Image (cartoon, rainbow, N blue to C red):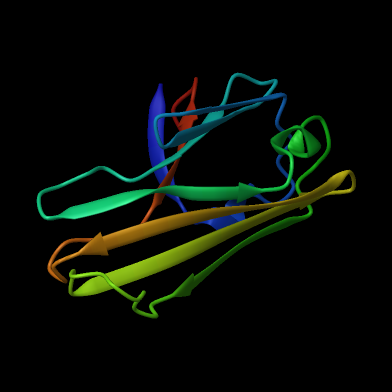
Length: 125
């Protein structure tokens, strides 16, 4: 089994047959046994979590991904005390619909607020 960090855009043209969303980890499963895990490994002095999912994850099933786009916004929200903030929007679309996964990260500015996507393959790449 191999595990490889990928760019989010590499999900384009991939077809998912199941999606699991639990505890700030989203796992996308494929028919060939591959899966993609999207999460942030928490560290000291920061917090990164899924703030919202706009759209229906089922719209991403059994049709090729036509759009896989990542955008960020670093505007500081009101009434917060951390030094650094990042909203990351992950946009996915198939012919059936569109989903926007919004992650929010806050930290003291030293720790990462980014989300990682890993491809886990049954066979070594």
